Image 1 (cartoon, rainbow, N blue to C red):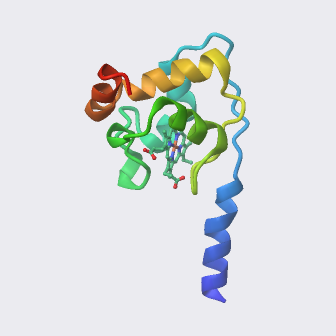
Image 2 (image 1 turned 180 degrees about the vertical axis):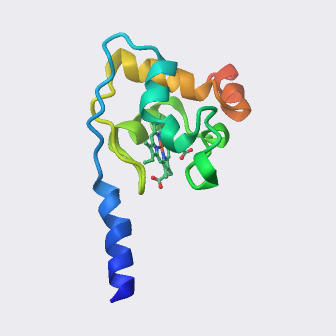
Length: 108
Ligand code: HEC
């Protein structure tokens, strides 16, 4: 029973959707601070080591956009972040880590 409750708690977050709506024309840093820093930390290194460290992410631009729009296992989906705001956000996130910056330089 306890395990069933635990599983329920874990899986119920998988379809969690966040209806955060970025300001039209908002830059990446602004969106990140408002919607992402609570879990990923202001510098992307992951809050309390509990949440994903974005600075070591090796995802490509399109894959990152996918995660943001559809969410992950724990991460909520942000379907309202799209278009120019999504581009700006992903560019910002990719600028946070050395690995990401490196991939950016080589065009991946
Ligand atoms: C509720 C906490 C939470 C919030 C808010 C959140 N994330 Fe996440 N994010 C996670 C977790 C946890 C993961 C690891 C995958 C999973 O379990 O969902 C993750 C994974 C990711 C990944 C995948 C990294 C990889 O290499 O696999 C990206 C990219 C990402 N988040 C970006 C963002 C951005 C950008 C925002 C703001 C729009 C954001 N996240 C908001 C918790 C969060």
